[in-house]
Amino acid sequence: MHRKDIAQKIARKCDITEVLAKRIINEVFDIIIETLRKEGRLELRDFGVFRVKERKPRKARNPKTGQEVMLPFRKVIVFKPGCNVKKKLL
Image (cartoon, rainbow, N blue to C red):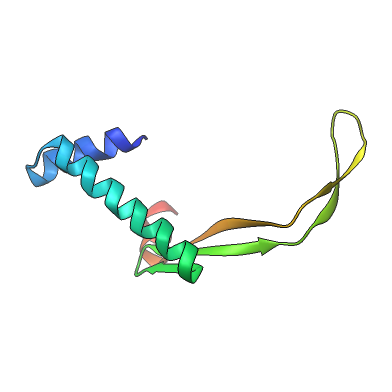
C-alpha cells in the first residue's frame, strides 16, 4: 500500500478531499520523523513503539566475493507492535 492509497481511504471515510488527506498524512509522517530524530522514540498507544537503535561497526562478508568488509556505525529504526496490532494480526 502506498501513501496515495492511504489518502484515498481516509478521504472516503472522513468525507474530505484527497489533497487534504495527503497533506494530513505528510504532516503526521513529518512529526514522526522529527520526534524520532530528536527523542529517539515514539510510542503510539495500542499501536506500537518506534525506536532508533544504534548498530556498532562490525565485520561482514560480501556474499558474491566472500571478501570481508567493515560495516560502519549506523542508526536503524525498529518497530515493536502494540497489543491491538498483535491481536488483529495473529
